[in-house]
Length: 423
Image 1 (tube, rainbow, N blue to C red):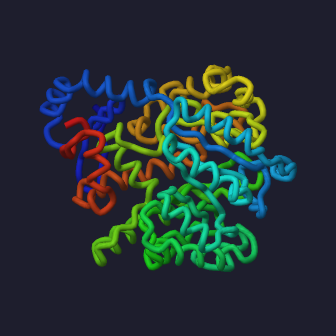
Image 2 (image 1 turned 180 degrees about the horizontal axis):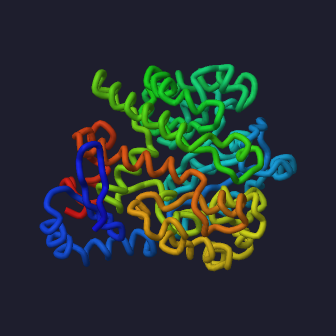
């Protein structure tokens, strides 16, 4: 076991199974030996045994915005191809045979909202649906439709400051999304997604306050990915980003305690799950192999399949056309196999890291774009180390339930795990 400090607490952790605890090392080692085989089986299943459940589907290549950090190549967006309705239905037929959910992603899927609403109604008994949108095309009746049908909605907003937000996402974006937030007020299936860049990095605590005031209960705060040149220009300092992110998490905990209204910072909650109950985690970026081509895949408007949307700008990772080769064919393709073969134990600097199975060294597409290979350590390494250490501190001081919903653990285990993962 390896030593880990959380505040003034001395912890011990076994990196392979993410078994951890505090107290006498000898007693912990004895206990770990009793549960080791069960934990190894659980980690093996989490990392190598899960089946695909989710399709990210781009019904159009077009977008009504031109965000400088977009992971999709400009030429991809400018070609503006729309998926025909019959093609869209063919893709959903393929998905319904094996997958559980479809998220309409982009570019901007609401450019096709009429068609999407028709097919969501037709496939509502076979699939669960979500939409990731920049929010500028939403009208009140659209929001009513999505809420009435329980569609999961990801809404992009980068800053509580209109000037900063619109400098990243285009003039008028803040005003339109603020209106949409009023329409969505209290909707539990809404998640606001903030892309962290050098321009908004210091504003994360204020972003939490703004979202909480608007009745938002879930958000994601994702580091901008270096899969495009525009994204690489805006990558913030990992240390600066970690400090602001941790301050935002603490503000969310404080507001939850003060008001009783929870705001979950999803990225941090997933890290907490990765510590307390690894198999209960929902997001699959912070494990290796990650979820790309394993738990989910992405399909563009011409039917081309990629392990993840972040790979769309990397043509060599196209796994074939879903409409021509079928789901099994693209999952079996060499690009998909290559991404699924990436293991953190084989990456220099990660192989001996205590936190390797909580972090996973994301993101392989970003690393491929920046370095021409996936088996290198992330630019954001220090960021992940700091927020994972802070997650341990939050657990140790007793604020777990200000971050997590108890149901997240009960769904996986039928109970709440003890102080150490695996207990």
